[in-house]
Amino acid sequence: MSDDTETTEGYVIDGGCIRKNARDELLEKARTHTRDCALMGHCIESGYGIVTDDDRLVLLDSEATPKVVDTVEKTDTQEGIRLRVNREKQDNQMETTRVEEIT
Image (cartoon, rainbow, N blue to C red; front, side, top):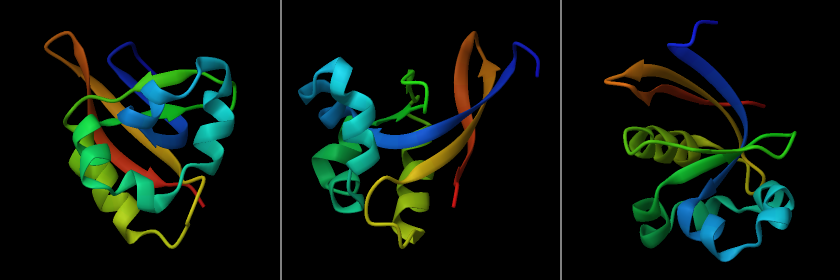
């Protein structure tokens, strides 16, 4: 993969929950983060991040938000939703181009 593209896999968690939880607890919180929380209005507005299995936090760009919401709305998974996020460099920033659930 080039420096202009990246794929990240992990658990989705909203920006509000990222901020209110201690960094060293974030992977466990993301593993139990609920679908209902991810779809609350203020959670959607806060944006999203992905916490990888190796405990790396990747904050997603605002372009990711509608893609994440669409994917989360379609899933039957109630907590610990795993996503694969594809991003491409555009104007020197990584922009989300695709979001899909990992089952």
